[in-house]
Structure formats: structure tokens, C-alpha cells
Image (tube, rainbow, N blue to C red; front, side, top):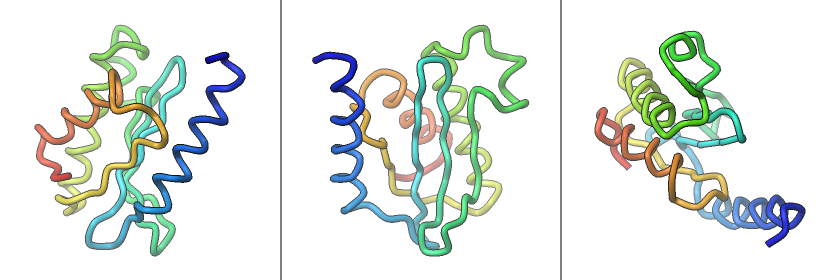
Length: 121
């Protein structure tokens, strides 16, 4: 697949997933976004259209401790951080939104790290 075809294909997958997934007050949505250099995670309440907490490789808590923001280790660190922030906010159950990405590599590692740190999905 050409690079110019990848983005429209991911957006199609994203929309197909988002038809079925929505975050509520009881069970918000854990949304993952990855770029070539960074990875981001947000916990979102779609009913109130409000971001409850977020973590990324750009955040001050992680930026100094990471060797590389592109690595799999950085995805694990973001997963642990988002789970810690969610537990502090009283959130234990979430719905995982992979945002059209394959459940593979950095996305999978972030999800597994969040599960190990205490989030249920």
C-alpha cells in the first residue's frame, strides 16, 4: 500500500470503530494517537465532550526520563502514566479506542501497560 493510501484507510477504520465505541461517564474512552515521533493517550467522556486525563511522550513527566520518544519503551511508559492518572481520578474501567491503528507494536504495548497498571478494558 502506498503511503498516500494509508491515511484514508486508517480514517475509514477509525470511523467504523467509532460508530460502535463511545465513552460514558461510567466507562470513558481511552483513545490512542501515534505519530512517527510521539505517542499520545487520552481518557475522554464523550457525553460531556471532556478530556478527563491525558499522557504522552511530550509531557513533562516523561520527556526527561525517556531515551527515545519513538521506542516501544516510551509506549509502555505512556500506558503506565495514563493508568496512574486515571486511577487518581477514580477511573478504573475504560473502553479502548485504537483510533484505526492495528493492535500491534506500540499501540499494543501501551494497552498492555495500562492493563497491568490497573485499568480494566
